[in-house]
Amino acid sequence: MHWLRVGLYFVNFVTLLYVVPVVWRLFGADDDDMGRLLRLAARNTFRIFGISWEIVGGEKLSAKQNYIVIANHRSWLDQPSVILASPRLLHFLGKEHYFRVPILSTTLRLFGCVEVKKGGRSELTES
Image (spheres, helix red, strand yellow):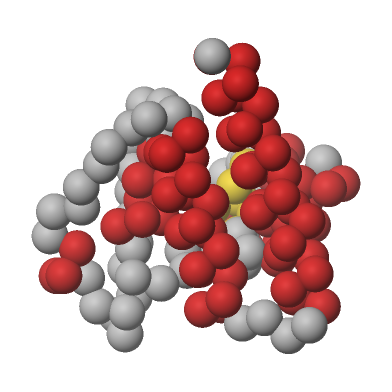
């Protein structure tokens, strides 16, 4: 059963976070569309692994405000949890290493992820 769930997660991940975004952006999808797609992928992730979840205090977040969200990386469920709690598309920060992987780089850019270069203050400011 474990391998079936991992397989379903992989299919969910590849389909909703690689294939669909490219097609959607080609047909003019905006950030709201991409946000809905990310939330669908996040909900599916929890369903596939049989994890129940509840967002507490989500009504305090406004879709019209800008926020900086800092999440502690404790597991692979951090990203889906933060995505589900947000009322709009999040723009994640990612190590420059991820932006060198061809397919991953394209997907990160489609979702508006920001590349962070390793180095000193000047590189950080540039990012």
